[in-house]
Length: 378
Image (cartoon, rainbow, N blue to C red; front, side, top):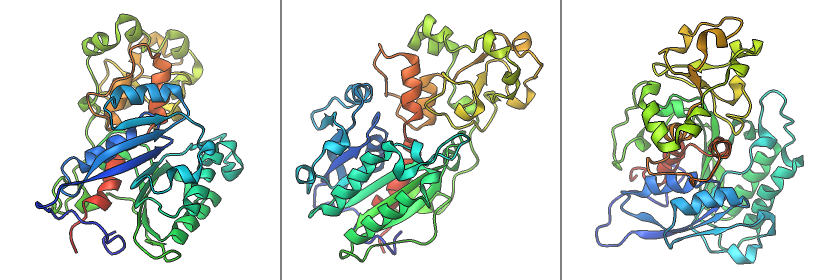
């Protein structure tokens, strides 16, 4: 991206204070984009997060957001994005982050893939129209969605808006496995910077499918060495005692997969993993509600590797009480959230699973942001 995005570098300027960036998080969810930006800029010599405005219609999401970002520089706009007017936000942000609903572009079995015809695309369509009409658009935009977004009609429309406004950008197809995290969750990302005359924007032709070497370290001039292999799940799994202390006995018991599920014929085909494994299926918002390998893997409490899990016709006969859901805290760890992140105590487990499944992976987004804010000087 160095040859495309040339406006900012990570060269220290000891004589000047760090610029405080104003951030607007559209479709903010539980704050994953903001956490990624804060992690990216934590030691950056040029920029820091000054203020953040979360734009999200879900009261459940906003409750999580405000609990984890209680400081005075945070605010939540609990509105339907389509109700926003360009005059209210024009020139009000340096950074936009966007993680719009993915369902219109999901390519899994049974997905309708209606794209722009899906009502859930209307919010993002409105964001595009606002950006197109702005006199003072944000300097940077970071975007995340499912892999199926790339190549869609909406992707083409979005790219045209960016080009017309003078943005240059790069695109990424990355998974947490690229960053040593044992979870397969391929997502599409864009890192955009306003640095060209209107109508002169362009993108890099090659889409990144591997981490950008210089963005892997905290130093602005790191060695171009990719990280070693994916870590085993034991680095993220918590002990039963820790989970019971965090969740209470009742909620911990609700993590156990009941025999009525394990006894089903289709239970043989679920994804079972152990602490010695290095991969899990993508965790979705249906995790804990729908038992299917496409909604996420299950953890075997006594067998180290999933390949060693016996699969009799009635799984409950051999594995009763031995299989559980990954706990929300464990999923947050896999998704790159800080150890201090917590859900409100009164929030039900099914809501926690849903919110995590709808979230971004903080570690991957941080890397995408680092390609902009930490690239070496030319």
